[in-house]
Length: 132
Image (tube, rainbow, N blue to C red):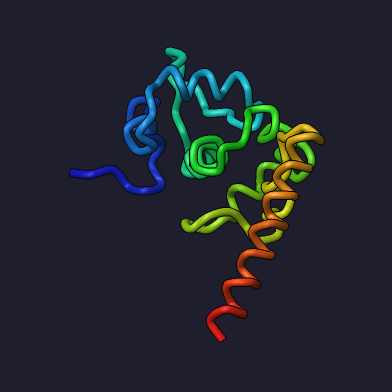
């Protein structure tokens, strides 16, 4: 018999769902105050569906988008954790896309990335005109 999707999950179940080690979840819990699983009488963590969704969003930003921990912390501080809960399975809420692109980067890196983006846009335009 499988658990209901609404049932609380243990740290090992969440780690399996997210394909990370349990120590990673404990580390993120220390770095992101928004992650607050319930604890039973013996101190074991119990994750609610919203906790899992939040952690999925954090993992997406860190692993898939390449953001730094500080960048994700800044994004969550400025916007609120609900932005990760509103995101769909394909990525983040479009309303935070521009913030996500630049959060966590120092000014020099932002400038380099902007120059790369502009160069790629120019190359894209050149390729389009060559096709015509």
